[in-house]
Each structure stands twice: as structure tokens, then as C-alpha cells.
Length: 297
Length: 315
Figure (tube, rainbow over the protein chains, first blue to last red):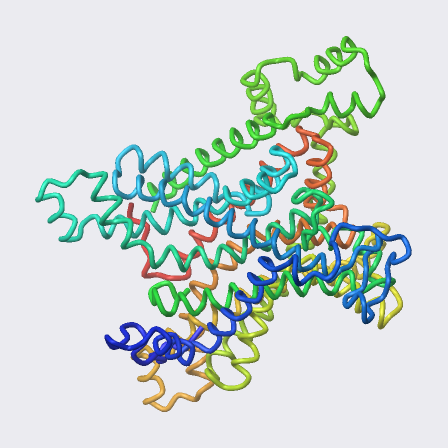
């Protein structure tokens, strides 16, 4: 994000004794775009958590009288074909997006960490098998693999999370493996071995914590693609089933019909998806600059 | 180089084999098979009829036999029959490939034509207002779902020209074809162009602070010469890799965009086949996508060695 010659001042190692707020403030000043991302993400999380209080209407109640109602004082963002309030559905949709985004990112990263750590630390045939597995998973475009997975598992919230997490596994596995390969040769690993620590304990207690920074950077980037993939799957009718208010589902194929007659049904859910992903991207860029300057590309 | 090529080629075959197993097994995990769906659709209730149907489709055989039959058929160009249309799968798939290929080609051309120059401008005028605007545009490009961008484009066409450019009939002339596909191509390519722009920018910035750039400036070379002759030629290498990967991974964007614009290409066909549980079509299409992706990667690797004489695959 920032230029190569850009050196943030005193952010990496704040002076000891500085208060938490002062540290956060100096970070915010050094990374204004990251701050913007953090604010967007905070709003996104708040909408998801407090959807009940914020929504004003029930997102599932249909009302024929309100079918395709234009935005007005009562229904801020209009109503859909079934007369459901778009604003309420967007608030509850944040919940679905966040649940799928966080769920699949965590699951994908956890599986990737296990595979990457085993592959990098143990080497040998384990490495060989895991690498081929990673090749296979990475050879297919993310959406294609998620699509086939989602179709074979059937449409539900849990299955959508699993379907999106699997294509994310190879990315985490690659990052963890390459870091582990370097860390494995470090003197502190040798020292731990010299004092008789078990290999498993070394891998989990000494190698793993040192791969955390690149993992956080990767996970933030993946959160964005997980949210986008959920939207695409639901848009195609293979993700979150009706009547749950998924943002992608709100834009499903029938949206093309509303492009002329009810543009609010097309514009607002799209803004919600884009804004949430934009927030993760801004935050991800700032985190990458902060935690891992080597991953600039 | 020779041994590297052979090793790389063998790994490619292993990967494709893995994908074929993965896809085949995943599709067989599906709770309801095609027999159930056809069965329900036809309103049949006699279990004997269902067993007959399963037998006809070969679904009563063990999964290993089914897999070997499929792969054996693949080896000599027999892809089986579509469950839905009952026509040979190859006749269903082949005519749709050129449509998607044209769309992908246009999208890639668009993304390179915009992504690379804008990335260079952004880097050369680092931290200017223009740089900030371009960076925010590229980050938005990475954040927008391509199907939404497609819908917005349809909306704009509807409002300004009173028409919506979706596919209704095969375009009669090449020119019509180009016009028809260029709109969805922009919707697909926008994301790739944003990615290419970002990468070109950071790659250019890295090159621009190298010593030889300073030397070039010191000997009095003009800004244009330094930026385009010295810097861009070196900065473009990592960009080539990403262009290759994007070319292979354009499929994701194509799937949703072909759906929005109603284009009868392979990408939309995949979604339809998945909905219908049309296994022969799904597994062959996924294999096709995998072959294209893996081959593209292979070619990009080779291209990289050609473009950058420093790289030697000595393995």
C-alpha cells in the first residue's frame, strides 16, 4: 500500500510505558487507510451483532402490499418482491456474511496450519503427499472448487462454510510451510532440541507462534475472498438457502429483472458486499505493512 | 532445463489425476443422485423403474468401476452422455468453449491494457493525488463482486440507452460478437485489471529505486526512457506471472458473469449441470477447467524463463 521509501515512525516497537491508546493512536496516524478499514470492519461487526436492535423490521416477514416498494421514510432502502424490508435484510445479512467469512477463514486456516506445519517440519514423505494435495486443491479456481463442494454437501449455513474453507486451505498451508522450513533451522529450535524437548512440542510451542504474523496477514486477505465467495455461491443459488437474508442471495439471478424496475434491490446489497470486502482489504494491507514487510506483493 | 520440463510435466499429470479423483468422489457424496431427481420429476413411484434407471445410467456399479470407466473413456475422447439431454457430453461441451474463450480473451486484454499502464502511472507519480485515486479504484475493483458490477453495467445501459445488452441470439457478424462480449468482458476483467495495476505499481516502485535506474538518470536519460525502457522492462516480470494466473482463474468471474449476461458458455453451463446433478457434464467440465489452469501455469513458468535470462531451471 505504502511506498517503499515510506517508514512508519516508532510503530513497530512502541516505547515501553506508553498507554494502549497512545499506541493505537500512533498506529492510526501511520496507517490512515488501515484505520478506515478498521472502522468499516467495526461497523460491519456491529451491524451483525446488533441486527436485532438495528433492523427496525423483521427480515423474513413478507407483505404483499409492500411488494417492490420504493425507499421511503419507513422503509429506508425499499422492499423486495415479497415485501420484505431491504434495510432489515441487509443488517441480518451482515450476520450471515460475517459468520461464513469468519467461519470458513478460521476453518481453512486451521486445516492449512496443520498441513503446512506437518509438511514443513516433518518433511520427507509427509511433505511430498501434502504438497501434491495442495497442488490439486490450488489447481482449480476458488469458486469452481467451492461450487462443486457446495453442490455435493447441499445448501446450508454449515455446509457453505465448509465448502468455502476447503479452497482456502492450500494458501495457508503454503505460507506456514515456507515459514516453517526457515524456522526449523533456527538456533532456538536447535536449543530446544538440545534440552530434550519433544519434536511435537517444538513444532507447536516454538515454530508455530513464529508463523503467526504472516498467518494473520493471510487470514485478513482470505476473509475478503471468503465473503466474496459466499456472495457468489448464494447469488448462484448454491450457498445460503432461502429465506435467510444473504447479501449474495438478495442479488440472485432474478436481480437482472429488477435492474430497470427496482434498482434499489440491486444497488444496496452490492454496496454492502463491496464495502465489507473493501474494509478487509484496507485492513489487510495495513496489517501486511505492519507485520510482514516481506509480503508486500 | 530438459529434466526440469519432464519433472514438471509428470507433476502436472499427478495433479490432474488427483483432481479427477477429488471431483469424482465429491460428486458421488451428493445425497440425491440423478436417478432420484429424474424419478421425482417424472412422478414415478415404482422402485423397479428406479433400479432400471440407475442401471441404465451405470449408477448401480461400484464407484471404482464408474471412475475407471470415466477415465478410460477420457483417454480416447469418450466423455459419456449428458444425463439431462442424453446427447454425448462432448457435443454439449465443445460448442460452448469458443464462447467462453472469446469472453476470457477480451477480459484479459482489457485487464492488461488498463492494468499495466495505470500501474506504471501510479508508481511514477507515487503519492500524488492521481496515485491515491488509482489505488482506491484498484482496491475497490478487488472488493466488488463481478456479478454486481455486471448488474450495475446492465442498469447503466438500461438507463442511458434504453436497452440491456444480454445475450438473446448468436451474434450474426464478428463485429456484433465483439460488441456483445465486450460489455461482460469489462465486468469480468475489472477485477483482474485492479490486481494487475496493484502489482505493476509495487513492482515498478521496487525497480525504480535500484542503482541502475539512478545510473540511467545520472547519464542524462529522459524520464520516459528511464521509466519505460529501463524500469518497466524489469518490473513486468512478476506481472507476467500474475497475468498467467489470472488467465487461468478468470473462470470464477466468468461463472457469475455468464449467468448475469445470459451467455451460453461453458462457465454458465457448469452451474446448470451442477444444479441438475448432471455428473458426466460436471466432471468433464471441471477436468477441462483444471487442464486449462494447470497448462497455463506451466506455460507461464516457461515464459518466465524466456523473459528473464537470469532464471535457469537446472533441477
